[in-house]
Image 1 (cartoon, helix red, strand yellow):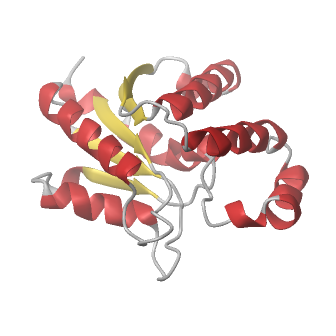
Image 2 (image 1 turned 180 degrees about the vertical axis):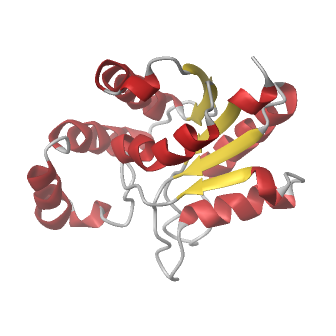
Length: 186
């Protein structure tokens, strides 16, 4: 497999609610993605996630791109998919980039809890979408789940399964868990 066929896909995490800065988990993901890019010499990096900043009008994937650029990754090899709001739409939003670039091997970088949801999405997409069948997905875990992530993981799994139905997803984000609207990542 040539380097042209490879990419590192780093999944976004919410901003730190108190400071409005990149969370420690997201920095850990970015560091792992940077390591994978350097070690495995993948040619491209794709950052995905539509998390909006709690205090300013910007999206987290652009801050992720800036962080990578500050760590010597050329901006021309960083692709941004910033229209997603959960694990499922991370892939559907990134699909056009993946298809256009004809990537065949993608290193998936996230935390342990998120990787489990990602595995399920990859499995479903391989069954339903022809373009996913011949892509080799390689998992890279950035950080392990800690106690404070338990509530987020429970809510994320609930939103993930119920969110497969668009009308249910809208109801969940507007009525049941309005405090999770700022996360926009499941």
